[in-house]
Amino acid sequence: MPSAGPEIAEWAAELPRPAKTYPVRLAGTRSYAAALASAAVGDVVMLLCEDGNPFDPDALAIVTADGALLGYVPRDSWLRRAVLEDRRGVAARIEGLDGGATIAVTLTDDQPGRRIYEN
Image (spheres, helix red, strand yellow):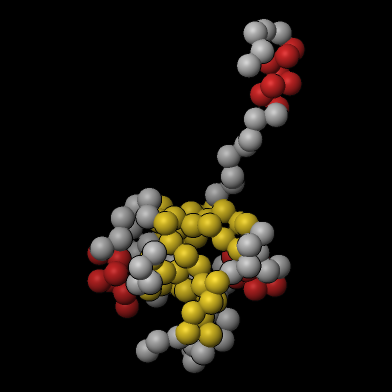
């Protein structure tokens, strides 16, 4: 670390910036109350394209690390376009559990994962 002066500004400009996160409220959480009851704010979750979903062929499921389904990305969410059209991946964690669930997402260059729809 530099000691003083304009060198500090140059040094600070080279520091990694924290990733930008965006809140996304989940849809369908009422159906997954048991899974939500065992989830906690800060838990890491996965966004997975859900193959074979008869209600939405482009469904994006949000699941816990142990595979419990928490809900879905809403059909009208900007995040669907980012994942399905722009082929962006997502790093996510639970941000809120007040009457449903909100996740904080960061877009990545990874390909989204997949899961098979289970009734």
